[in-house]
Structure formats: structure tokens, C-alpha cells
Amino acid sequence: MTNTPASKTIRASRISIAQLMQPEHANNLGNVHGGWIMKLVDEAGALACMRHAQKRVVTVAVDSLVFREPIKIGDLIILNAEVTYAGRTSMESEVQVIAENPITGERTHTNTAYLVYVALDDAGRPSSVPELIIETDEEKARAEQAKKRQAYRISKK
Ligand SMILES: CC(C)(COP(=O)(O)OP(=O)(O)OC[C@H]1O[C@@H](n2cnc3c(N)ncnc32)[C@H](O)[C@@H]1OP(=O)(O)O)[C@@H](O)C(=O)NCCC(=O)NCCS
Image 1 (cartoon, rainbow, N blue to C red):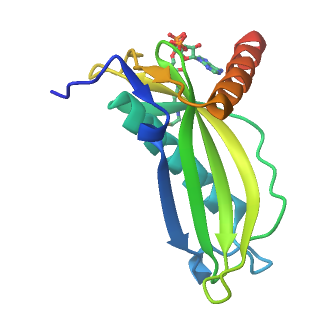
Image 2 (image 1 turned 90 degrees about the vertical axis):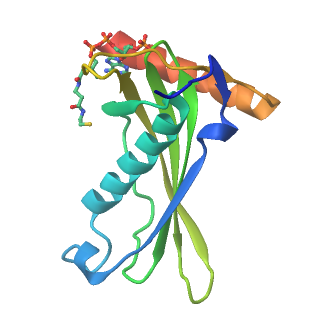
């Protein structure tokens, strides 16, 4: 049984995953398939929320994903994720996607995505998550934006 605190910092949820893009990740144009990037975005977002909640989570909403630059086979894809909002059982993750050429070190920020997850108890029912501790002015501003995004999603349900 995990001992989950009542509140946790955003810092504690931060996670970074990196994966080399191989030929099996290609689309017909020879760049990385968008569906593959979406899978990694969902995994990174879920991991940040699992770290925060210390429970398993399911994806409940994904905001629009805009791919601004193609990612090439041979690039390293880096996904930085953190929790930006925690409700009673729901959480929002922000996921930044960066493509890095591992030879030149050139990095391109290809997109940022926002996803919502719900923590589940052992019976698969929504389960409460720790409050989010806001430590900096920047985090405060971003948390206010996240709260507005979540209110908008709920209004569209
Ligand atoms: C996630 C799920 C358990 C929530 O069930 P539910 O009956 O909507 O539960 P609730 O109404 O109690 O909502 C739970 C939380 O989700 C939030 N939520 C529900 N729908 C939402 C939406 N469209 N956008 C954002 N948040 C949403 C609610 O606001 C609530 O948040 P809060 O507890 O922080 O206030 C259910 O919708 C589900 O099982 N969905 C399928 C998940 C899935 O299979 N994902 C893909 C594979 S991982």
C-alpha cells in the first residue's frame, strides 16, 4: 500500500522520456508517423500523472495536437511532461515534444500537447489525487491557464 501525501509539487511529477526514431516508426513520406508521436505523448502525459497520483490512470481527454515540424527517422524524440492541474480525481499534463538530431545536437520544439487523465482505484472507479503545490509565479500563471482549459472541456461535455 503506497502512502500518498495530500499535496505534491509540480516538480515531483516531471518526467522526460527519449526514444530514437527508427525505420519502423516511419510514414509513407519517410518521416515519423504522427500516430507514433501521439502514442509517446500519451505515455509521457500518463507517467507524469501516475507520478503525481501514485495510482494508475486513464486518458479521458486530449486537446488538439498540431504538428509544426516533421520529425525525421534518426532523430531522438524527447518528451517532457508535468502535471499542470489537479482536480478531485482528474489531472492535466502538459507534454512538450522536442526532436533532436543526435549528431549535430540541433533541437526543434515540434509541439506542446495537453491531456487529461483520471486516477482509478483498484475497482476501476475514479479516485482522489493529491492537491498540486504551486511554488513559483510562472507555475501559478500556468496553473490558472490549466484551470481555464479544464473548465472549457467540462463546459463542452
Ligand atoms: C475516465 C472515466 C473513468 C471517468 O468516468 P466518469 O463517469 O466521467 O467520472 P466522473 O464524472 O466522476 O469524472 C471523473 C473526473 O474526470 C473529469 N472528466 C470527465 N470527463 C472529462 C472530459 N471530457 N474532459 C476533462 N475532464 C473530464 C471530471 O471532471 C472529473 O474530474 P474531477 O474528479 O477532478 O472533478 C470514464 O470516462 C472512462 O472510463 N473513460 C474511458 C477511459 C479510457 O478508456 N481511456 C483510453 C484508454 S487509457
